[in-house]
Image (cartoon, rainbow, N blue to C red; front, side):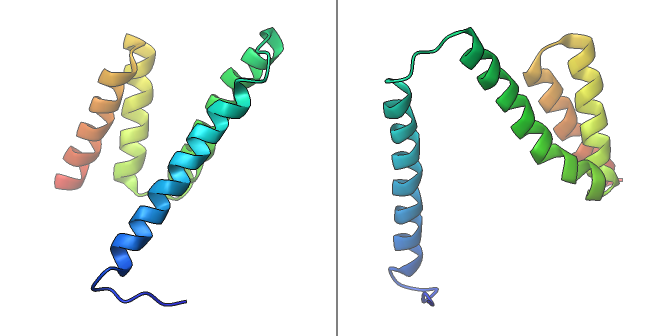
Amino acid sequence: MSVEPSGWGPLLIVAVMALVTLATRWGGVFVMSYVPIGPRLRRFIAAMSGSVLVAVLAPLAAQGDLGARAALATTAVVMLVLKKPLPAIAAGIAAAALFRQF
């Protein structure tokens, strides 16, 4: 399948992606409204978010450039010291920008 880069093609692709995203998010909320959330499921959900984060960051740490590794290290250190995610993320972004600038 090919889509013309001009006209309605790109807009149609973005609209379909937005609809699929909304459907999966709303569908997940709908399905989970029928599932009783006990302590075991809460532990699973908490562990799953960490697993997804590691799955996203591990390839970046293994194959990323030095700027990406500096950002990951800075974020980890600031998070361990401050225990607040927003300043850690900001520090990581700043570290990557500074490293790549110089």
